[in-house]
Length: 342
Ligand SMILES: Nc1ncnc2c1ncn2[C@@H]1O[C@H](COP(=O)(O)OP(=O)(O)OP(=O)(O)O)[C@@H](O)[C@H]1O
Ligand SMILES: [Mg+2]
Image 1 (cartoon, rainbow, N blue to C red):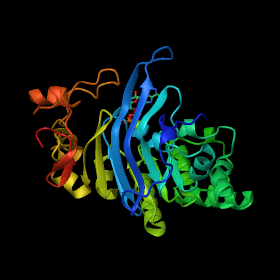
Image 2: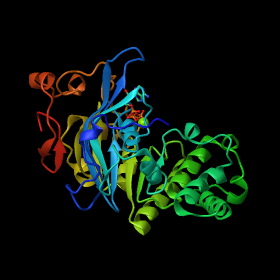
Image 3: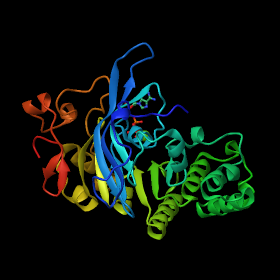
Image 4: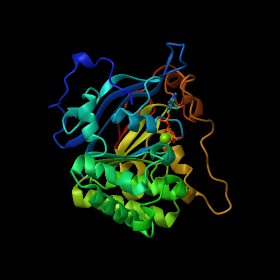
C-alpha cells in the first residue's frame, strides 16, 4: 500500500525528546484532508488539528457520532489511509519517541502488527480471504516475534478460544468466509492482541458482538493492559464501555476534539453542549416507554462544515460569536472544552 506520509516531512525531525516522558503515544496537531474527487484540488478536512497523548497502561476513548473523524484519526496514526484521496496536511505522531508520520515505510512496517496492534472497524475487508484464519492470525508472531509457523498456528488456535470461539484448533483451519461476522470480528481482535502489542488501537471492536461476548472481549483487553502494561486507544460510541474501560475520554465533533478529560469528569461534569447531548441520549437516562433524547440534526459532511464552532447549528446555546469564531480547547472546570460558553 502507498502510505500516508506527512507532506512537509523533509523539514521535520524523526525523533522526539520534547513532551511527556510517560507518553507512549502523542498525536500533535493532526490534519487529514480528502480530495473531493480525482479531478479536483479541493480538500475537505476530516481531522482538523487533533492533539492527544496516551501513557502506558492507560486507556483513552475516542467518542463521537458517525462521520466525526474517529476512524480517520486512528488509521492516520499508522499511515493506513488510502493515498489518494487522503492527504496528511500536518501533524506528528510520536510513538515511544519516533515520529510515525515521517518514519521510513520499512521501519513503520516493523512496528505495525508487532509493537502496535490495530483492530479495524470493518473486519471483512481487513482479513485475507484466501488464507486460513489460523495462518493469518499467526503471521504477526512469525514476523515480529520470530516464532515458527507451527507454533504460531497453535497460539492462534488458543487465542480463538480466548475470544470465545469454541473448537479453536478446528476453526483455525477455516477461511474467513466460513465464519460469521461476529466470529471474524473476534479473529481480528485475537490477531491484534496475540503479539502482546505495547499499544492497541481498537476501532469499535465489539459493536457487532452480543453482550456476553462483548464482556469477555473487554476483559481480555483489560488483561492485556494489566499484564503487559500496554496502552489502549479505544474508539466507541457506547458510553457504557467508556465508563468501564476509559481513563481519559476525548469527544470528537466534525474533525476536532471538542472536550477532553478524565472519564469521571467527562461523565459527571461535562462542559460542552455536545457532550451533554451525547450523555442525555444514553438509554440509561431514559425512563421506560419514554422517548430517548436526541441531538437534533446531523454531523456536517466534509464539504458543509459551518464557520465558527462546527456544532453551532445544532447547539441550543449558540450565540453570534459561535457562528463566526472557532473556539479554542481550553480548561473549563475539570475538563478541556472547545466552547465559547465554557
Ligand atoms: N476514503 C475516504 N474518502 C473520502 N472521504 C472519507 C474517506 N474516509 C473517510 N472519509 C470521510 O471522513 C469523515 C470522517 O470519517 P470517519 O470514518 O473517520 O468517521 P467515524 O467517526 O469513524 O464514523 P463511524 O462512527 O461511522 O465509524 C467522513 O465525512 C467520511 O465521509
Ligand atoms: Mg469509524
